[in-house]
Image (tube, rainbow, N blue to C red; front, side, top):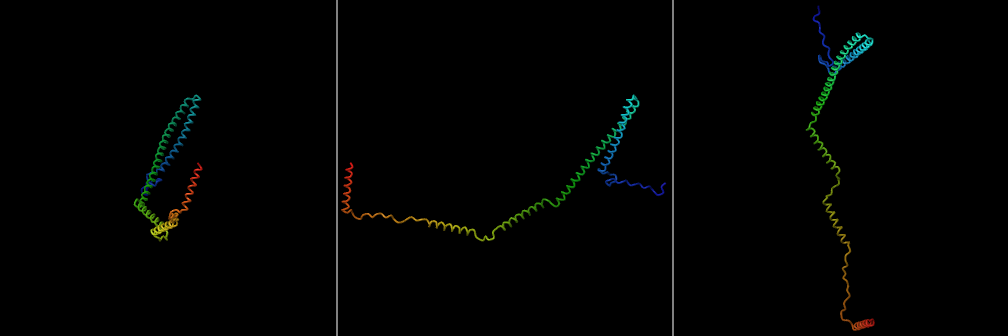
Length: 226
């Protein structure tokens, strides 16, 4: 008889994930691996028993005691059947472990992808297409302004002469130079060639006689040469 009221029921022990009846996949994998180790130990123990019974059966058979040999062999078969069951259980546990590990990996991958998606959304809140276009326009304007400033700085400050006036002055200098070259060339002699004066009157008498004598002498020389 309970004199202190109803007996208190103990609260269920919390699991590793902090829940009530739920189970954490990671802790479940650990539990399954521990069970697998226990089955391995159990299988090793039973296998040793089966090996001992097989050796006993061979010894009895060698001693011509078939009854004891058959009894030992039957016990060995019982252990062999137990080993097969343990191996089946181990295969089931290993399959569950592989499935859970794959599920955990998929869950971690999904969490990472979800986190990446949220990060991309957060980035797009501060950087969108319109903001990028505005920024690029401002960059282009700043570059154009910088180029104009560079050109202004590189322009000579003493360039106060009119280019048209300079070209006109150069043309005048070229014309003056051409005139000087023409003036410096030697001129042709304009003095007329003096021809001998023609005789104003006829030949004198003496000249006529001398000419006749010379003519006679030439004729004489010609006749002697023949």
